Length: 437
Image (tube, rainbow, N blue to C red):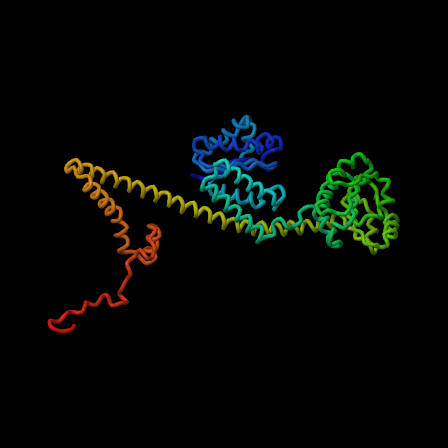
């Protein structure tokens, strides 16, 4: 059986298509059970997230899986076939490892996907569709993910403006959890920044916007307060971190407002991050001793550094994956060779049994002596089955001898002791008539 991956993800399919083919947790058992009933599908697991639906399977007929997917999800194949990808063999193994490591995710290096892969394995194991091949594939993927996480910086570098904003604030305040954060605006960039800062659990979050009603949903998402923009001059001194991103054609925070806020803060430091173009915060404010002002270009430098570092980390991760993929493929080759040998061994044994059984039947019919026929049958089978291994051992190296002993399950004490060291090669003493030796 070959390993395959059939699926689509955020890079190949729009959200509407991903939604139509997603598997809810309640439908996975039935889906897996149905899938392995398809001809040519021996083992199967399904990974279904908001960003991807992938079927990982071992079998001989990959073409039936796309047809099954269309039937099971009641979606016309033509509606999603342009978004499908199919990986086979080594390419499929490499894809699985990249997914588990977060290298194929929308956010490079994210760790949530590994938990989802583990859930997919547990589900397949529970249903009974996880065979030896996929079990080894999952375990190898987990090992690869651990190696990438331990030995590279994938996921550790900053590749977004929002993450860069948090990073710059952490240079000034070691612990954001003790700070008060003010967001000016309610657009997409402020929303992203709010999500990153909320993860650090600051002491307080407030969102101000020209239209307070628009700020309210954003504030509610993060347990924050929403206030109108005209309250800014009164509340500004209360905040340690200020982020602004609006469409205002003129600065919202001028030098005079900032100076008054610093005096009221008794010169406690404040970080101001201006993500707007044109600027929301007058550049002259950056010259104040207690203000750390960063603009969008400053954040871009942090992001560029992170992207460069992450690119290097990805190259290191791919080298690790190459090694892990090679190890898995070697296991597949050795396992395949072992399976063929086992089949040949069983076929040979069955042929010997049939031949000797016919001889025993003829002997029994001729002599009527069942005991003698059974004894002849047992002795003939033993001699013929041990003939080839015995001949091999006469020419075997010590390593080959040990290998064959393990194959037959022989313990060290099963072998007669060699007695050369005790002089066993010497002839026994000869008695002399009428006296001692």
